[in-house]
Image (cartoon, rainbow, N blue to C red; front, side, top):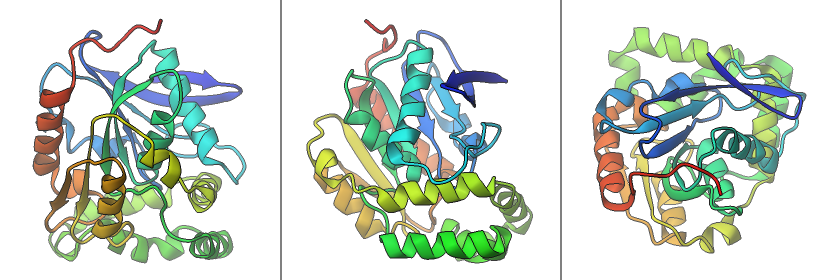
Length: 269
């Protein structure tokens, strides 16, 4: 296991592939940890340096008291890239991970060279919606709301044909730290990245599951428009297409990398 520290916080990450390969940072969704990307990894092109991490309050990383801000979450992603002496990486961001990716891309120095936005947006939901979710989970726990969350995560066919796998994803969700989950909910509630995402000028693509109940495809497509980025619909997938349709998602990422990414992306000046 690999760790790095940001201030007093210890965070967990994985770093796989050749040191001098094109670096790709994967930032996962609310209520998941870095294992969310495992179904995707076998289909990605060889030679990549693949970096995954657990944001605060998720996986094996430390939990801090809620609430969190998007800038705090982004500071941790930046600290990881600086810890690894990386710049101009491609960031693949899912849901809140996509918001972190957008926020990171807007910062100097040039830590981000390209974006892959998956089931995310510059603004997700309303302040009232998130505060209602925070209150409900604070009162009753994550497990009590796990069924509607899983219905947004996965399309109906996944629920009916892959029940054993679904149970594992439910376990991942329910074992997420309460403070970590609520802290990230607060960060999403307060974040509107529309203006800064509109100002970005870098290669990007976006995609969304057709059955996503958390970030509907039209919302993701709107954010893609801010970046003049191609948008792809992953038919029959929910909020986590990297799990339901890893081959299709990997094909899109591989094509994007082949078109836009240069071999060497490490070594901060």
